[in-house]
Image (tube, rainbow, N blue to C red):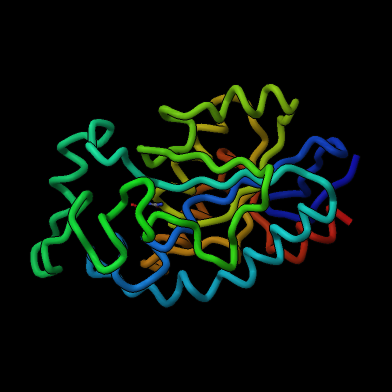
Length: 224
Ligand code: C5J
């Protein structure tokens, strides 16, 4: 079985049965004027991982393995956005823009608005799956579980943003459903470096209680 040099120990996967899930590499989080910056965050660390995520995606495409993208977003009428989520987006001192409000890239975190698109460098290819997810986890209120079952996938590599919110939530959802999960350490980022470091430590603690972590270079070597 092919394997990837990872922590807490090597990650083995059945050839041809591995998929990449790229979480929420959308303009809302990565570019100025979206949800991330409306909450008062510096988006530059997230912009910095775009070339690394692109290399990881290219490796999966070259290996003929599925690449699944997600976008966090809501229907224009916000019927899938709990009032609690909208209310908590209103950070004092951050200009009070929240989900559904008109921002510099259209309505914040709303499907179909320019800010909700994937960043152009990481656009999905025709035929690749792009899931719109209203929650932090990609399994909640989406067909992800059925899609993976249809593809016969039991092993998942994760990339995207933010490490401790949507990436970690989705990894934990996947782990509970029996998927073997690995987080690509340098293809994920947070607005808070200490949260990223803590998430990586938590995932691989206790013998890989949530899964494995490895740098993109090691993942690409494993695919080759
Ligand atoms: C957040 C995400 N941070 N994609 N969403 O609200 O992590």
